[in-house]
Image 1 (spheres, rainbow, N blue to C red):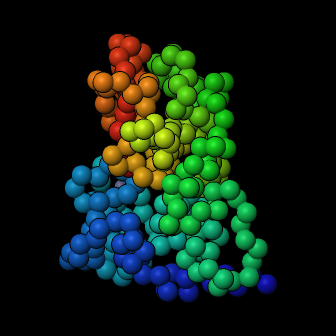
Image 2 (image 1 turned 180 degrees about the vertical axis):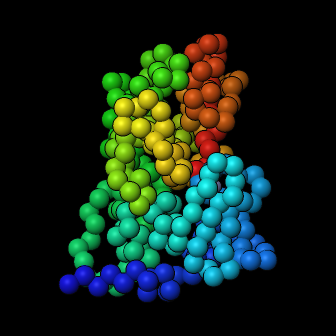
Image 3 (image 1 turned 180 degrees about the horizontal axis):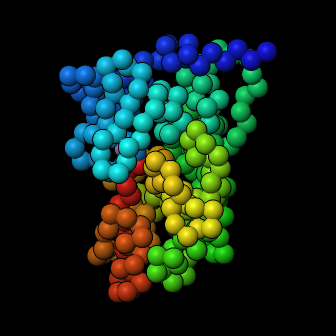
Length: 241
Ligand SMILES: [Zn+2]
């Protein structure tokens, strides 16, 4: 008999405390504000409501929202059960979700990212390649791009382009996921089609081996387009989110 009391878990885990582990929150009228961890947020747009139960991002087209269980699903790439387990370990008796993506806890997002990266396949012939070619990119698929079917937080598995985010030494330390429409013709119609996992700040998607001068773009697709047109070495600074 599963003893998964989601409301008790929500009650026991005030959202500001859980968000506060990874996002610097400031007290404001009506709750808390911080920089959204799901998109590249320069001005704090991520709002935790005063009830300490719900969040919403007001930044651009982001619009990500939900409760503490949604937040953990989004940041830790686990399903609802995985999120409940991370928030209330041992509090319930249902079988543990064995998915590769829930192996790592919130303290090890880089580990979860690497696990997804290792399980992903080369992009050639996959919806990831179709997605890039639909955007006009015809270059051979770079090594930093792979394909996987990943669970969208709170939803089902979707095809996803997985880009490796590397540090200055070229070591993969994080990933950026772009959830795709089933035919790869565009992004999936989900609130946050692009989400990063692991330490992206200060690191980059290296489209080409590091060079003395590197064209840096904000989105991978832009970097690839410039590289295709100019053959200049390119990297992109991943969007957080
Ligand atoms: Zn946002």
